[in-house]
Amino acid sequence: MEKLYASFDEAVSDIFDGAVVMVSGFGGTGGTAQKLLLALRNHGAKDLTIVSNTAGLASLLGFGTLPGHTAIDVGTLIDNDQVIKVIASYPVSPSPSKINSFESYFRKGKMELELVPQGTLVERIRAGGAGIPAFFTPTGVGTQLSEGKETREFDGKQHILEHALKSDFALVKGYKADTLGNLTYKGTSQNFGAVMVRSTGISIVEVDQVVNIGEIDPHLVHTPALFVDRIVTL
Amino acid sequence: MLGRLPREVIAMRVARELKDGDVVNLGLGIPSLCSQYVPEGRTVFYHSESGVLNYGPMAEEGEEDDDLINASGQFLQPIAGMSFFHSADAFAMIRGGHIDVTVLGALQVSERGDLSNWMLPSRGIGNVGGAMDLAAGAKRVIVAMEHIGRNGDPKIVSECTFPLTGPRCVSLIVTDIAVISVEKEGLVLRETAPGWEPRDIQNETEPQLILADDIKEIAL
Image (cartoon, rainbow over all chains, first blue to last red; front, side, top):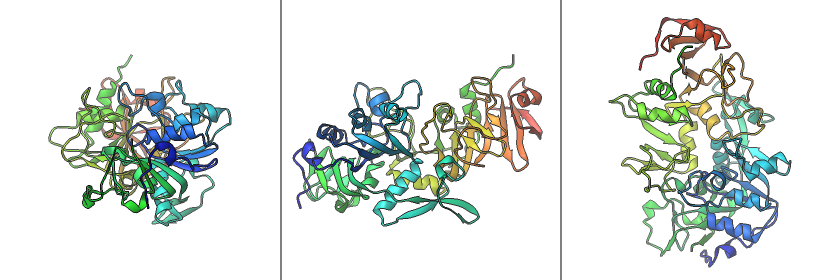
């Protein structure tokens, strides 16, 4: 099966209106599939639900972005009116005086938010890829984020039930892929991407380099090829 | 008017709590300053939600790499002994009880050690990030903050009125005028800033403080 796509546009061309799309990245440009996001913006699919750590922080504030660079992130899709719901841990600007487009849509009642603690968010994604439908965690107990959730006591401590998250597509940034789809990441850019590729229908990975089979030492593969459906590079 | 300790001095006092070999996660603001003041002879391993353990100084200008950041989005120097991992592992470290100490900022801390630090009700929306995971999962939660808000309201309160980050999670509060530990019987005032009498500190604190037998001036 050929995983290597000729263009970013082609790699995202079947993302449909109403799809659930996971977007990798911690908040800065590292680990964010900026060229895939730009292609999705140009493709124009609407009514998307986005699963991502933030809802546009680098594009607004330059969070984790090299000096002089302009970031493409989830905010780029929101600006283009393609998103109706965000599932995130850090959706808004830390500064109330400089709000992102997500927050302006939210305030107008035009955007749904599911706010999730970051560790619960990534564990829900991990569970989605590991055949675990739900799990109990103490994170969030006693807070407004536990309202309406099933609780259970383990070892004398309260826990809440959290459900797995899955998606139709995941847009992920890797560093190097071989043509089979074995993948490596750089530095802190594994973050959400290395987990999202496991819990999605179709994983689409933007990499800096594609190499021949055998050129990535099997000991150093971060994501085994079976989790990768599409690879695209410049 | 009595003098308040600057942010750097709050951080310096918190840093004395860090033990040799501790794995530590520092929050935004005053907590992030603590790494500059770890007492000599102690090695502390810093963890960040961005997926790095044992990070050191920030990158020099011109040497920044966007694949090497901490949870505040600051660029880090690559140093020997670092390791990188994905977010599920970064949070297994937190939620699995592998972080010895986390230092967090706060909007409010209650008499029982409840913490509120993620949302101002007036804004109606906030970022929870990893704060709830740290509050529930770290072995020890230290709060570093100014004792009162900008409007003069006490931040150490009988009941948190802002949305909670975690119930009964804080063990020590270090502020610009006091060091207070959270005990079963209530809040114990242990150290005071130079010139501050316990009654001055009580005046800026909503719940009743219990005075430690060996109450002393904050030493650095």
